[in-house]
Length: 267
Image 1 (cartoon, one colour):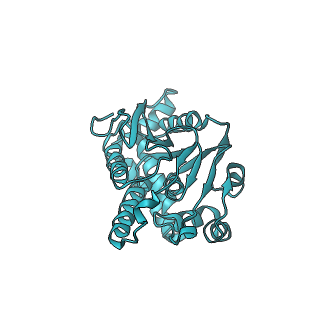
Image 2: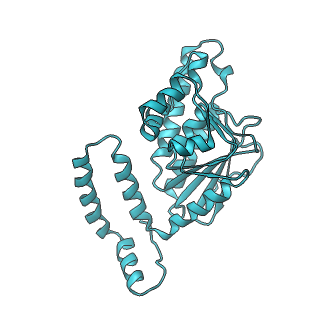
Image 3: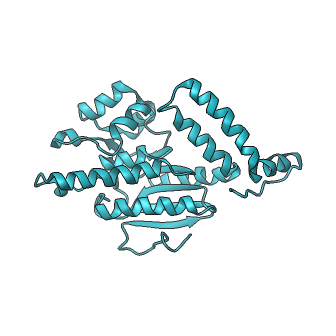
């Protein structure tokens, strides 16, 4: 991985390591892996670096330790009611998580414990969520006079529907891993300690796909959130034809016909 985001130091708020074509990012702010202004800026910078590194096809995000994925923002930041601090943190949350959502590859949250507030919101910004069976998820901001400002109201509603979003946000309901699977908040539940392994295995399978195709398909899928069905159909045909400008398209077809594994260029 490139030196600007490869960081193994224990003091780093986000530890980054490379597993083949997959970047593993570990939130590392004990005891609850809370977000700070620095860690939000670091996440944005890391994702931008991953976008520029064509050797990376996917990323996995998890939390350090066995209790917390992330407990969200440190409420001490908002204790004095300073609106300037609130404005700055809302901007940093938005920039970081929207950059993650727009990552050109596949992002997977390995939820290994409590995912609360901004901790759940970073998972919601990922493409896929895998939770360990002991994980608990919530957006409890309204209990302290706040609201989810990092995509929580929008992304949660898109995933689980209006009714469950209102139960979780308006009623403060905490969701277990099994319940999260039932309401489609997560895509898989695994045993304690197995979320990272499961996420890495899934992320590595992305390498079997053309990176150019993955980027185009992800854009089309996420297009459904903001555009009409007819617009999506037109965009689908447009991007299909555009893939014929890539080496990946030619390599993929030839590899299939020659019964060999493709060697992606990922332009």
